[in-house]
Length: 382
Ligand code: MG
Image 1 (spheres, helix red, strand yellow):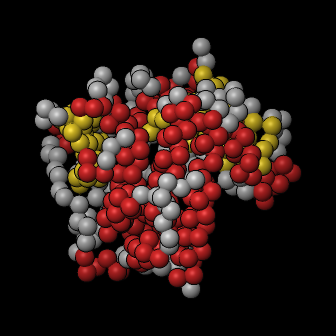
Image 2 (image 1 turned 90 degrees about the vertical axis):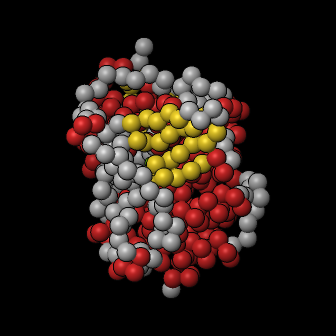
């Protein structure tokens, strides 16, 4: 029986790799919608290869450009509403949510409300609105399958296990490109250096988040919501080889780990075929050529973003939405070479200190916190 998928953010890194995984068993898949923000040329190429039923283009300018030039005969949706419509279409059996940032929240909710299985690569959705998203998924009895390698590892370790027997989980972090850089030199970090991740090939935003370790902070928050764990039960260990993707420690002291080469197609395939592993012939893990695995504590002085994430999670309410929004703007400005690498955590800390927290926020309150934080951080910079 074929499965019907919509891919939100189909031209991004995860979107493209999702299509590569679909190629492995192409006849089992029907492509419902592909959605993009602005990359309409790449969308045209995907249309020729995958023949989707419809597309959505969230930037209205590029929607108009696309409409003018395309020969595509399927449905063409526009704007954030268009992406939400694609996400919530009742024909979807599975939705891959691989949008970047807060823009993923509403489409992800639409997918959940339609009752589709949710493959979630957009971690900012759980960071900003974890309580609402997980509650909605529970009400609809919809599984959230994380596409993050760490959370996929934990999901795999928990297969056949009782989650009440978890003592703690250990998320591994590569440590990023600046793990061994002396603290004194952090002020001189350039954009090109920050974009050079040692192990994983990813989009720009997440690559910067990995360099600051905010990505790991987000993953702690993500793990809290996905596995219903208190923050004290979530540890972070730096593991530069990125071979162990994460571990679960049980109440008898037994520890399970999931290992593999760093290749996002593996967690993508596991989410698309959960709970099954499918045959794939990407490079295998070769323990003898790796030789050693090493582990270090995260350096919170060099990487204050990780501490900020733990702190925001403990405060709860809109704190994690503020954390996310401040980080999105700071990273955007760093990508535009407007601020220094070390300004990123400073701006986030300021936003967390100065913006009023709302406990158990509604979706509107989260959206307000998001907008207020963006305005605040922009004002602080100029
Ligand atoms: Mg990850």
